[in-house]
Amino acid sequence: MNQYYRAIGFSTIKSLHQLDRIHKDILRNPDRRNVVSHSLSHSLVQLDRSYSPEGLGISLIGEMDSEGNLLVEYAYPYILPGNYVYMDEIQVERISGRSGYYGVIDNINLSVIFTLQNIAEITGALWRGALPLTLITRLSGLSLSGRILLPIQKSETDLQYESDRRMEELTNIRMVRRGDNELLERMMMQEMDVKDTLDHRMISEDVMSIVDSSMIPYGLETDTYDILGTIVNLTETENSQTGEHILLLDVACLYYVIRVAIHRDDLIGEPMIGRRFRGITWLQGIVSLDRLV
Image (tube, rainbow, N blue to C red; front, side, top):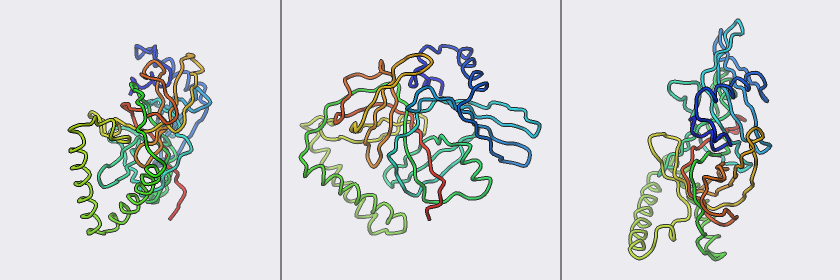
C-alpha cells in the first residue's frame, strides 16, 4: 500500500520514518475525524487529511478503547471519486486481518472488487444492523503507471449502439441474478460468439484497435486491475504539501466511470478527452448507505 503514496504526490517517501512523520502530523491535525462504536468497549477511529481541493488524501484507521487511548492500525492514500454513480446489488465484505472492507459487484463474467474508503461509516452501520443490498457506489483508483492511447474511430450510430448494448447487459445481469437460467445460457452463447469474432479479427488486427474498454484483474491483489477506458474528463491538481503535480482522469471503463489519480511523471503520452487510458490501477470507492429498497 505504501507504493501508492506516489500517486497522490508523495514520490520522495523512501522510508517508514518519513511516512511516520506524515502520519503523526495527520494525528495532530486531521481535516476529518470519524469515531464509531463497534463493540461495547472499543470504537473505530478514521482520521483523514486532504492534500488538494480535488480529494487527494491520506486516511488513518485506528481503535480507541474506553479510556480514550488510540492505537493506529494502518493508513492508506486515496483519491475521492467523482460524481459518477452506479447503483446495483453490492456486497460489502470485511478484509481479513485488518479493519477494512471490500465492495464487490458481481457482473456474471467479472466480479469487480474495490477497497471501500468510508470505513468508519460502514463499521457504524454494521454495528447497528445489516446493510441494504442495493447500494449506490462511486469509484476511483490510484495508478503508478499508465499510457495514453488514441481512440478508436466510431460513428454516432456505433456509439449509440454500444450505449444501448451496455444498458441491455446490465438489465440482463440483474435478471440472471434473480434466477433466469435461460437468459444466462443465451448470454454465455453470445460471449462465445464475441470471442470467436475477436479471435478471427486478431489474426490481422491489433487488439488495441478492437477493444476500447476492459478491466482485467492484475497480480495477487484482489482489488488491482489493468484497466482500459476512454477519458471523459481530466484535470491537473497539486499536492499542497509537496507541490507535485497529479493528473485526475475520469475514465469510462465497461459500466463505470472511474476517477484515476496518477503522477504526471508516470503517464506516457498526452491525455485528452476522447483518448484512451490504460494503466494498472488500485480500485477504491465509496458506497452510500441510504436505504434504497
